[in-house]
Amino acid sequence: MKVIRKIFGNLDTKDSKDIIEKIFNSSFEWGYFIKDVDEKSQEYKQVREIITKNGWHDSVIGTEFSKQEVYNAEILHFVGAKAFAYPEPQNPSFLESTYYDSCKECGIYGEQKADFLLKKQPILGSGGLGGLHWVYDELFSTYEVYKSYFEGLNMDCRPVKLMNKKVSAENIVQLIIPYTIPV
Image (cartoon, rainbow, N blue to C red; front, side):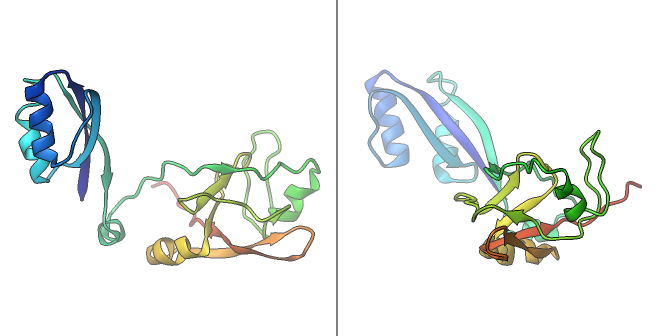
């Protein structure tokens, strides 16, 4: 596990500028600076000792886990994925053709019986993961992201179809999220 910290502050004296440049072995401009560092790095150990003295700030901005740490985790918490621009079908028969059951009042979708039909090839962005802005519990990923990450979590996937071409979308799959029953 790697804890990433953001160091930021004002380089308003020659001493503070010299110190930070020496610690990080790079030049910094006068004024405010920001530097992300691994909490276990030698640079962080050195800068940690002078943060308060110089009026700088230090906060945790994230944690990176190895694949093995993720695979060995007892519990994983998913925060969400960026929605891509797949417009909500205006035809209510979409629900009946995609799901066995769904509630039009509360918006909860039941078990899926057919592949999603997309108007065009979605662009999932640099993370290779996306969701729909109107069906929150469906996730889509590039095939590479699925193979390198989700397959190792024993998750399955299903194809995504392009509406007009009746073929699978290129390099995009829908993740099959396992049902969990509260204990």
